[in-house]
Length: 465
Length: 88
Image 1 (cartoon, helix red, strand yellow):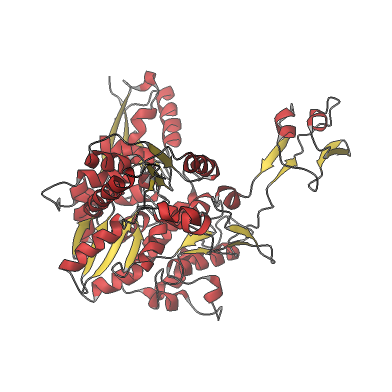
Image 2 (cartoon, one colour; image 1 turned 90 degrees about the vertical axis):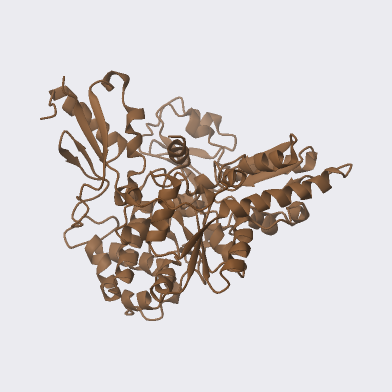
């Protein structure tokens, strides 16, 4: 479960604000001061001591600048060097900082001191594997034979038995995280679909993405044309109308803006055409949506037999970038969205140079000292791409395709890819009763993305108000 | 009757650094308090400027709450309502 409101995302954003501000002011030599500013002498440490906290902050800053721990060849290389050589997310999308990782014990049921060694012993009596013995008047679970059914926990009258999870492994839908030989957690990038759950759930903030923003700032400074293509989930990210948010994006230096919702309309049209052809077949396997990169990655890496069912239509980002490239052949194109997986998708697309998250956008706006609510509205389209804007919410893609076709579709909708929804999906694919599979990796759709500024529910509330 | 006043900073920094849900405070207000409390949004109140204090910021009858959350604000309001401190 992702932590709803926690310090880790605030620290990540705070670090980004400080880094971006120093790069904007051309004071990268002051980057080395950030760990000291955040953890000055005398402050209570989060970890064992202030020095450890400062080391962790250093690796987090390096990570934002595009460098992982293993890229550090000399420990005396100052942060200012990394700041001057910021290299974005070209090599690293997501870094697991072993210095920050707490090496959580593997997931298991544990008996706490609340155990009173009672006579009833419901933990022992109800255990199907005889894994519970009593030592020194307290229950003891034999981890060799325990099958983690949880019956002991549910039956204890004192709530003395607790499930201790390893949060990152618990939430990873594809089992991409495991312990390496040194006892640290490691992400297997061959399996990882960049959903970002581990980053959201780690209570130690040990998993942190790299940012393209330092390079975008340099491009803007050197007067390179940088066009922002902005995902429809932007509505509701700030407490301001869409046009004012676009005004703020202009104010931080992007040359021009393009709504990915326009690309999404093209996606919806092409998917509708694909579906028309498919529905002519007597037994159609159903068409799977292609707009969510984490989902497409999931299929390619875990369910290769489904690949043929994935729509051939490029994602809204890809189609938007093609349109922008026609008008701005020499510009750098930066995608701005709620998503971590887009960093991976952007890297594969020849037209998209950068991918940044709403978190990074928020940090960049703050670093510039721009107030969103004070910006002049900047309007983009005469025709509002309503069908495309639907793409930000679960159900929206299916709705747009169905509207275009003028018919009701049998839709299997997945709002949040996890172990349970994957099971349901497998059944639905076998049943062949669905015309369209709309799968969004994040709960609620893109508005629930891994790197948003507002929760999915708050975002919907802002849009409706 | 003068009401208790809650001022929520709606500046971009407070929004980005953990305050995005504060303006929806009204929805968490107990029914009995609805007529006693006046919730206002304010442009940046300037507390973030020297970096010494922790955003997001909320004022309850002029009392500053740092690292504000909906639950912290409600807790502070409860104290003010119990003591009957009103807006000056």
